[in-house]
Image (cartoon, rainbow, N blue to C red; front, side, top):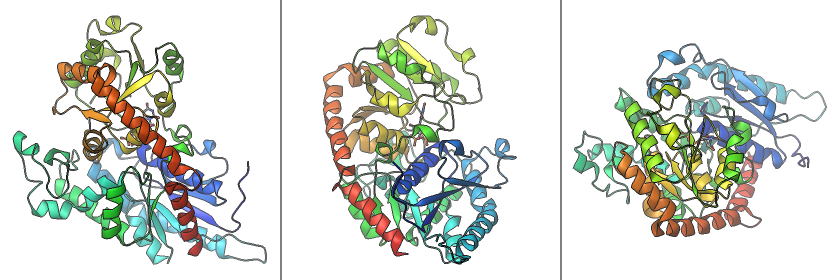
Length: 460
Ligand code: UDP
C-alpha cells in the first residue's frame, strides 16, 4: 500500500559505504518512507547501493576520489579519514543544490528538507549541516553499549588500558565498563592506533552536538546502556530497532545472495544446522581457515558456511585452500556459499546456531530469529557485542583463544548445537526474540520511539 505522504517533507540520508552501514541506513529510509516522507540518498561512488531495488528513492552519487585509490589503501583508519575529507565539498555542493531546489517556490507546493540523517562515522556531515543551518540526526549502526565504549576511550587511555598488554593482562576486567575485559576494548588493524582513537573521538563529539541519535536496537535489550547514554548525551535518543523486522536486508545487499542454500536447508532436520558467517569485512590467515574447516568437519554437525571472496587474507579464490580430504569428508553434511540470504537463513527452522563475528547487524538478526551464537569477534565493536552476547544476555558462548584452533572449535560447536548449555541459550534467546517482536508492535517501545522521531523531524 502506498504510504500516506507527509506532503512537503523530503529527508536526505547518507550512509557510510560499507555493507553493515548501508543496510541499516536503507532500512531506516524505508521505514521513514513508509511513514510518508520522500527520500533522497546521497552516497559515495565507492560501494554505491543498488538503486534499482528502491524505485521510490532518489539516489545521488558524489565523487569521493576513493574508488581509484582503494586498492592502495590497506589501513582502515586512513580510508575513513580520507573519506571524511574527500567528501566535504561534493557533499556540501550536493546539499546546497538540493536545498535551493526545494526552496524556490513558483506558487506550487514545494518540498522542504527538515534535516539530514547521516551515519555517525561520516562525522564531517555535522560541520556541513551546521554551516547550512540544517539539523543533523545521527544513525549509529552499532549497539548502544559499543558506542559507550568508544565514548570512554579518552578516559580508558588515560588510565593506561591501551598500552601493550601481556596475555594475562588482556583477561583483566575493565572496572569502568563491566563486564568488559581488556581484550574486549575496540581495536582496529591499523599502523596508527593514535589516529584511530582520535577518529573515534571526533565521531563521538560530532554525534554529541547533533540534533539526535538513532539506534537500531530495542529498549529491553539495552536498558542499562540506554540510561547511561541518556546521562552522557543530553540530546534526543531514538531506539527504533530491530529495523530488519520492518524492512528486510536483502535489497541492500552489495553481493549477490546465493539462494541455493535455502533448498539445502530444507533437507536438514530442525535446529540441526550451524550457520557460519563472518560478515562483509573480517578476514583471517590461511592457517586459521584450515583450523576452522577441520573444526567444523570434526564437530559432525551439519553446517552452512559463507566463504566470501577475501575471507582468507591474500586469496581472492578460496578453492585452492581447501585442506586435502575436507570436501570429501563433509559431502552432504556441509553447504558452502559465497554469500547467503542471511536473514532468511537465520529464520529457517533447520538453523539451530550461528557462528558469527558479532557485527551488530548479524548479532541483532540472530537474536531476533531466536538463534544462539558462537562468538568469534575480530575488531572494532565486535568484541563488546560478543561479551554482551555471552556474559550479559547469555545467548551465546565465545571462543576465548586468540587463534582459531580445531579442538576448541569442535567442542564449542557441540556445546552450542547438542548440549544442554546450548539448549538453555536457545530458550533465553527465544524469549528475547519475543521481546523484540513486542517492541515494534503498536504501543511497543520501538514503535513509540519511531513516533517520537517523526515528531522530532516535523518539529525542525
Ligand atoms: N550478510 C548477508 N549474507 C551473508 C553475510 C552477511 O546478507 O552471507 C548481511 C547480514 O545479514 C548483515 C550484514 O551482511 O546485515 C553484515 O553486517 P554486520 O554488521 O553483521 O557485519 P559487517 O559486515 O559490517 O562486518
